[in-house]
Structures are given as C-alpha cells and as structure tokens.
Figure 1 (cartoon, one colour):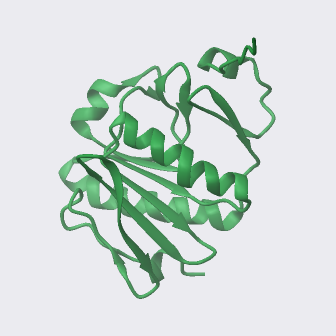
Figure 2 (figure 1 turned 30 degrees about the vertical axis):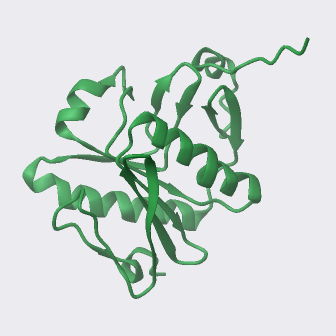
Length: 184
C-alpha cells in the first residue's frame, strides 16, 4: 500500500520564509524562485491598468500575488487578480481571498515546470473553482492567452500578440495594448 501525503495550508505555515513562493494545487506542493524583473514589470503594468479601469466606478480591485485559498489543499498566490467589489466583500478574510476572483492572471516564468504549472495545473484549478477569465501572459514572446468560462470550464478564447489590444467582455471598456504592456 502506497501512502501519499497531501500538502495543506497548515503545512505552508511551517515552511521557511526564504524568498521562495510556495503554492498548493490539489494537495501537491509547487515551489518557485523569486520572479524575473520583466515578469514583475508585466504584473505591475497589468495590475495598474486593471486598477485604473476599476477605480473610478468602484467596480472592484486588482492586486498582485494575493493569497487565494480555495481549500486546505488548494492554496495559491496568482500573479495578478481582479475581483469585483461584491465578491471581495464576501471573499476577503484575514487578508486572504477565499473565493474565486473574476479574473486571474499568471505571468509565465522560465522553465518547463513553471510553464506546465500555469498552463495545466492552474488552468484546471481555476476552471474547477469558478474563475471567469484566466490570462496567461508571456513577456518573452510578448503574447497573452485568454481563457474564458464556458459551460465546460475555461476554454481558450484568443491568443494576442504585439499589435493587438487586450479587451474583455468581463471588463467593459477596458483596453490595454500589448505594445504598452510589454514596452521596454
């Protein structure tokens, strides 16, 4: 008999504060190093654009790498989230989110393990947990993949490249050119 341990949020509390990012998806521990400069710049620009769009009408809030706890064995820190005021009111406790934000963005980090986590494990997690849109941004190729909720989960809606403008039916009148997003 093989006994497989499942990581939980309580286990995360026991890990060292060593500058690494620890996340749990379906009971499996994922660890990554400090992000690359361009990774963080992409996160900052996306968050700033979402926040600037959202702030005037108090539609919601954008944030970088918040704790998002769906369950004891699904505890992650997405790169960027946007959550409506209504969901935030009910989902924020003790400085962590316990409900799916409408939008989650992951910015790819180099390495096949990191890419597989964002393209497979996190896509499945966010689809299962009720995220309405999932964007995967790649600062190296200057592209953004958009996944939108359908009756079967999150399905790829588009892949945008430089010259394209990022928009969403979820975010009326929001737009961000990819040239602006990835500008040096």
